[in-house]
Amino acid sequence: MIGKVQTFKTCVGISHAALAAGLAMGALGLSSQPAGAAECLLDTNNNNLADTGLDTTEGATDNGIATATACGPGAAASEADTVAMGNNTEASGVGAVSIGGDPNGSGLGTRASGVYAVAIGGDADADAAQAIAIGGEADAAGPGAVAMGGDLDGNTQGALATGTGAVALGADSLATGPRAVGIGSQASAFSAASVAIGGNVDASGTGAVAIGGDPNANGFGTRATGTYAVAIGGDAEVNASQAIAIGGIASASGTGAIAIGGVATGSGLGALANGQDAVAVGASASATATDSVAIGRQASATHANATAIGAEAATTRDNQMMFGTAANTYTAPGITSPASAAAQTGPLQVVTTDASGNLATDGGALFAAAAAMPGLRRDVDRNREGVAMAMALDVPYVPPTEQFALGGGLGFFDGSSAFALSGAIRVSPSAQFDAGLAYGFDRDTLGGRLGMTFSW
Image (cartoon, rainbow, N blue to C red; front, top):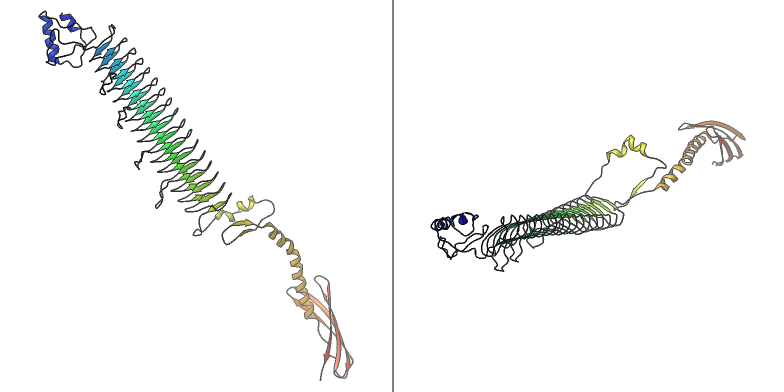
């Protein structure tokens, strides 16, 4: 009898005094209800004594397995090297360990049914190979999955990891995809290789990453719902594939979109990129059209393939580059460098602008001006020569006593020179006619004049 009592394993629900009393009873030749070598004898009448015919295993069973241990009412350890400890606990996979109980009174307490599975906590469940479930109503249902956390919201489901190799850590955390990771209270990683870290965050796209929380406490924290989407920051949101949102309340909803920035003063939104391949960088920056880019605080690019750079810069049409606002000035030191000049090829252009700052080039005006330059030069030269010719011309005076007069002269002006010869004839005592011819030396130009003089 003593030998049978000494084969009991460590028991749940039996005190040291009761165990000592049991040993004493064995020594005196007294006998209680027989128990298997791996089933714990419980102090059924709660008197801290091993009472003959009263104390029992209360339904604990080792299924006849010598290396199985079952302790507690209804505990069942049914495979080799299994341990079931607690009310209605079950360890049914080889090497499985189940420690806990049945607090909801369903008759199904803590269960470890997978090979080498471990379930610890009231109604915890580890039903896949190598799975680990720790916490009240925690559930590890995927091979190698780990679920650690209780049931904070009271829906009879604690931390849940159902994907192969999935990890759920935190009250009501969830990891359902293969290799998914959910860390934090109510963190949810639904898809393969998705990662959700933080309270109330959600990563539901394949390979998606959501890191942040729910500072607004509205039940919807950081969310990454697109394939390979990345959302980092409180209430940041991504719901398109390959998109990225970083910053408080940042949002990226266009495929391949990138939104980086938090909330600007006076604005309720973080950076927003909801156009395909759009990019928004800056507090409350917004890029809402395909291929649009907004960089700067509250910069706005709302047109396709348009870019707004600078605080509060805003595009006004497609395919536009908008730099700053009317309050900005612009400096480009390199525009006058020799390297910039050397980089120019082909005909040059003239840059023009309107009152709104819209820039353009007008090559036609430059070409017309260039084409006119030789003609202008010739005209200027002719004008110089003409002035010199005019200065050389003179009106000869015919005295009343004479009939003819002849005169000549040289003229000079701004580098040009000319020679002139003039003649006059008196036709009456009070009138004369005159004529002159001038020659310009620079361009071999000829010029002349006719005149009449009256006197009285």
